[in-house]
Image 1 (spheres, rainbow, N blue to C red):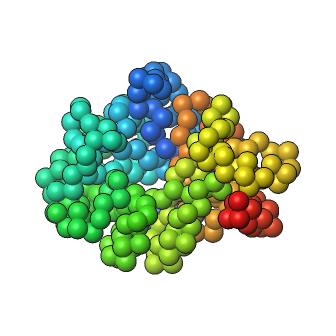
Image 2: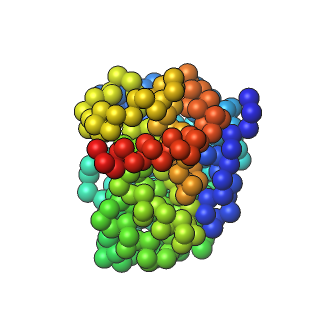
Length: 291
């Protein structure tokens, strides 16, 4: 298989594959279960495909533990990103209150290191887009201290409007993770601003939850309103969305999750086809903006 294209993750200097893996799908929640065997198979398929960027979180159920269990022996093959500010311990989750004190950030990173069976994380991102005031509760300074100790190489922000602009202006984050796709373009200008400031850009939601069975409601209503189907030129919608996302010149990597190695292979194939033709990318943007 040809090598996946790589881009430099901002000022970190890390050369990351344009397609990354979002490990939320292997968290094994009741409404969307996944087995250990499925997790082992897809995680190894990720590395076998040449993907070198894996994103996870304390919040993602069994995700961190599974990565540690099945990929610790291959640690040199990939960059590993997790999150902080999350509830620590067995109870919690993405909807539980996040706490940005020094104590919780330190406890979270130490827990992640144990679960992931590694002595360092390439990137730790603040989860849930905290405000500047929340970051000043001690968590930011604590994460910088962990960086000085070598437990964290770079610090980042999983940011969204309305706090993202202020987070960029703080000038302390090496990487920003933000949502972006043909159907969710709202963060495009701030993504550009962060990239211009030298930060690496990680895109999530780049296929707009593109499981074909879910092509209704929410973002997909916007697709119908924008009347994009005639731009596909025979490609599946998910391929179009992924190639649209990597057409953004400020993107360094986009994280896409799955438990299905066949879907993973399809995503790799789509990325290998490269960005959309410039005129198609611009026309899709125009239609969405006027829908």
